[in-house]
Amino acid sequence: MISPARIGIVVTDNYTEEDPDHDTPLLVAALLERGAEASAVVWHAGDDPASCDLLVLRSPWDYPDRLDEFQDWLTRAAASTRVTNPPAMVRWNLDKTYLSELAAAGITVVPTRYCGTASEAEHALSEAPSARVVVKPTISAGARDTGLFERTDPAALALAERIVARGGVAMVQPEIAELTDGAEKALYVIEGEFTHAIAKGALLAPGGGLIGGVYVENPQPVPATPSERAFAAEVLRAVAAITGEGMPLYARVDTVDSAEFGLVVLEVELIEPALNLHRAPGAIPAVADAILRAASPA
Image 1: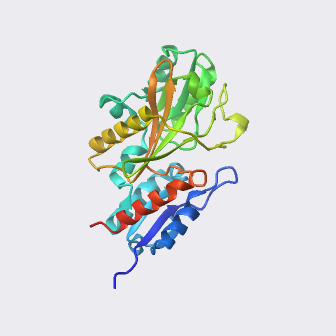
Image 2: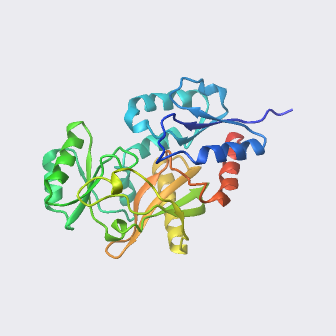
């Protein structure tokens, strides 16, 4: 008799009321219904990774605050069992300088200057092609240390200086009006197949900080055009070629269709994207079945 697959859905233990993990209970329930042994696994709890046939990174949203620890955990986990998305792909995706590699591969991304010093940031701000800019670190999540500023606002340079002072790299991007207006669209792809799209509205308040002072998404299902679906597929083919890891099991491709730059990639989230399955329950079977296939490779 074949034993059921032992699947760990990798989470953390530090969620907020404004930003809960909606996906994990739905995924665990779907996997249990399919005969798997599935449970949530807190990545830093010290559990033995070998107790699972597969670990699926889902919502370890505190990893940017514990990056070295997370990297060590990835190494240990990969030495003991299968991890998806693959650790090499995850490491590549940790630092948003990957956008430059996608651009080099022919993908249209939001124009970005990468600044490793305060002087570089000052030049990037002074040369920005728009009146307002977005400043953020290359390693972050949940819009941490991200701000929308007038390019001449001293606060823009101050944020960049704080980022580089702690050893990070600051990104300076032109404001995209459609993004400021809340037109960002997240395209979800499971095993290379589009499943659903979500709009979460505007997050950044002009002058720095978040609208309402706290990170709160308002995810709403939206349609995706054929060109958007094709674009997401093109992006992920580039990811597979660059990383050499094949097609990711799950991916979120953040896009905005802009008058100035056309359809561009804002971010490709391959580590821990909220899938918003509570808003798109029709995608649950596709995700659960993909996980089962990954847990029991032929």
